[in-house]
Length: 272
Ligand SMILES: Nc1ncnc2c1ncn2[C@@H]1O[C@H](COP(=O)(O)OP(=O)(O)O)[C@@H](O)[C@H]1O
Ligand SMILES: [Mg+2]
Image 1 (cartoon, rainbow, N blue to C red):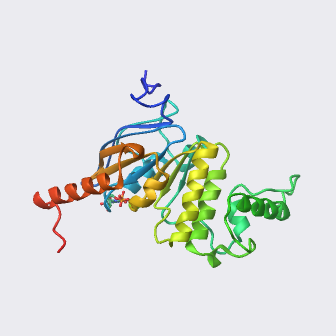
Image 2: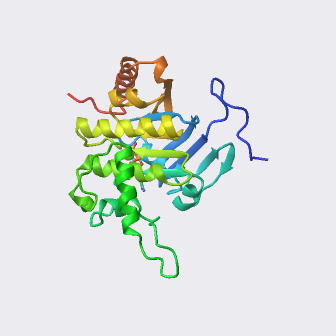
């Protein structure tokens, strides 16, 4: 019988919404994930940190059903799941915003917000209800304080931060979303744009109870909105702390120490 997640992890309130047990993945001869163990609490925001190539995106893609793990188990809400597609994972409440956004540049802001779940007038022809989508989009963007003056504008006219805000807002609006995965949502963003997304993340976890895994390199940002931070190195979690019980200094020290250790062991070349 493999249908339960076992007892809750010590120190956590209730059963985690998501738990990964010994996830492995190889691409050809390269072992990219070497037994990842991770748990995500309900409403918790987990920051995932690690060097380029550490396996962060691969892990996100496995959780979201985009690629299959070679080994290990995934439990959602205490039930073991093996998602074979993104649609299947989505039907269980797992949503993702990828590094490369999935907005359609030539479509308007409001059409992008309703992409793949457009409102129709109903009836036999099922005509798109543009008027309703426009006014709901306006209201929703106002609600979450995303300032987009013209929602008829094509998505390609927006700044990177505005596009990211729409992608995040759209994912968080999916019916039944429980777990949201954000892969570098703040990459290449200015301070104002980043703070917009940070506010969105906070709001979604605190007021709507959505659990999140956020990949990011900026420790200052992560400490602003994460409940916990995990470090992934060469395909395994090597450090995991609640943000309330650690500090940016402690995380930095760990990363520097790890870097030195790798230089000493000849695994990376020293940067002069
Ligand atoms: N589809 C793929 N085929 C072969 N190798 C891949 C593929 N996807 C990722 N990799 C490799 O797996 C490693 C981890 O990549 P990735 O998960 O993207 O790391 P991160 O997101 O932490 O930078 C890298 O060495 C990368 O080149
Ligand atoms: Mg990546």
